[in-house]
Image 1 (cartoon, helix red, strand yellow):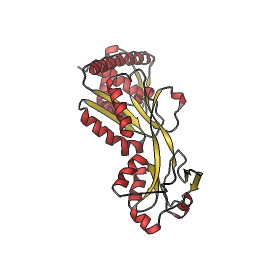
Image 2: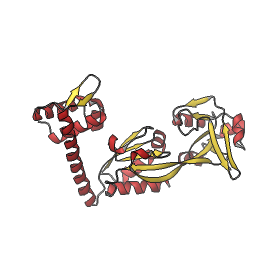
Image 3: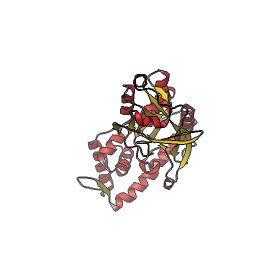
Length: 297
């Protein structure tokens, strides 16, 4: 006989994700098993919870009431588990984390690997997306976002160290084409641009110095929608790029890249950690947040 608590959790995740396939991926089980859990619940309750179509599922009136009750019950169980874990003195449990793609891939994974090594009973589920995410509705514990906060979310937000940019190029590129001395010199260089950059840094690169702003419209014959591919192109000597300072400094220290225009700055962007304020007092949240801030600093 299928476990009813697991069935309730499967039902809630199906409603939140909108499909059996997405719920199965979230829960680590097959879509067929998710469907069995839902069917078993409906049989036990003697009522239909979901209206099923070929494309999506929608709640029946009974399903809507049951969903709200299940959410309350599961939140209470999860809260009890978290409290028990926090009083044991051992950091344990799962954190569902959402972060921007480039930041997550090139910076956050390194931190998470070290974090999980220190706390073997912790489990992290990381989802990378550049979409605006509401932690409450999307069922994430913590969300990292770069840029100005969406005030409509009405969530607790903890400032993280700013997302700072620098400009770099490979040594072989600079040997061949020379070092730009002023931002305006970039008009005569190959510049690698991040095609979907919402901050307006696609072809318009805003530099500044003690003498004021020094914006430039850069020339580019290569625009890519993935910053990792841009970085690979830069390492091959294809052109100049701008990117997150913390990641680029690693490559500069290994002499794979060389900073350019160091007398100028690129305006940094705000970075925040969004979370449910009712959970932040739990030890696993506090430790994770504190250690991530320390790492980014």
